[in-house]
Image (cartoon, rainbow, N blue to C red):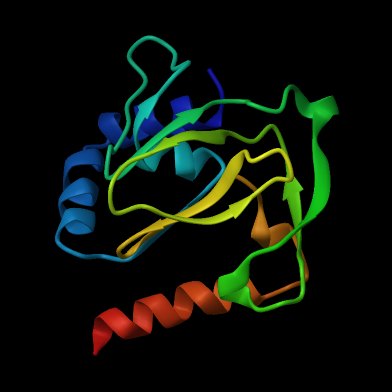
Length: 151
């Protein structure tokens, strides 16, 4: 398996999965990018047998939806919660969000309609890597989310 499988197995092996899931369910803000998005999902439609998931977001994801490392790409996304200026996003063997359930807000899609960013309450998920961009707007958005919970 890949990163999400390895992270999931380590969470279980070190006993982090249940406490982390409990904290998130109690309101701890969390943001999963790429492999982290997969771990937050309730389901994957192409998971490896026994892949551990935290299952705290009402979404289904497809692992490696855009192909292998060579198919990695970057593109500008319209993300209204970040303002009018497009956000330059980097997709590196990323997942895609194939289904969203009640209470999940779609924040961004690709031109073909593929969902790549979502929010469900205090939980944020992105299929791309905002940390690779030099644009801090997504990080500021998450910080505002965290600050709103602290009040």
